[in-house]
Image (cartoon, rainbow, N blue to C red; front, side):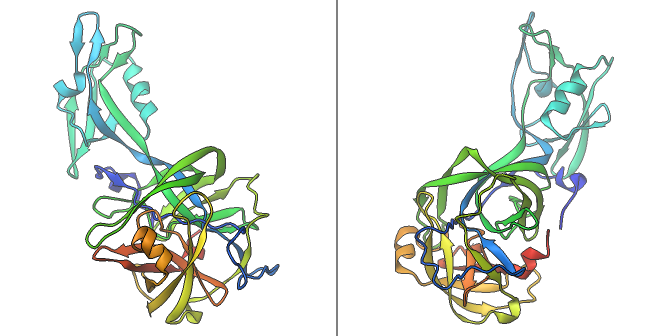
Length: 344
């Protein structure tokens, strides 16, 4: 599922509640994950990733003054533009990125009209750009953003198709609606801190991007995660191939997730699959429970930043962690790998 710009113009804020997990071939005890050369294999992910996603909307995050030869003025404030507005059009032309604003304002119009989306409604207003004294350029006095970023997890890599899958759930706004993207870059990441989860308050992993380590380009944000093209120079040699599992093979009982809660080295943690619902319309195909004492001691259970952690049962990749129960951080949901594989 992918919503276009017209729907997304109504969004005021976005949240990037990713759940990070990491997996390499080093020090993970892969006794059950034997390498396979058949076409049913994927490279097991789980390594942390930093996402910089270009949105299809331009949101006003601040109103500022323009210093002119006659003093300070604020064209946006005077016109009635407010923080949280989505800039839709300028003189009838669609605004899709920050640079569009400067381009349209620089044109020699006798009159300027700005259209914004506020609270789901379109509002048009006249605006008079001001000439900045230092540069001579016309400005309207807004601070805007056209991208979002956060830390998440790569679930698997399909080397044969040069693609990757991550998160297991969509990037959404605060109302839970999917955010459209117009590309983006996915970097390697390092987890440097964890806020422990407690009942009623989800925990959080905190990570730093490795700007020189590009995993790939983001292409799609959909109901099953963020997907994209793998960087040509991405090295899979230290990753382990694993067979694809099927929802029909998943059963209640012991399974494992691979996550990193500090640094870049992943660890294997035991979980229980409590319930299986392969036809769940919200892609909540399993209920899982963290059983591993070490993970519980360090994080309290599932925390924001662990979405996309691969779930393995009987040596096969069967899905990814997606959500935590707010009132019980030891439990959460997972999506079946079948759903992710069919999305991109």
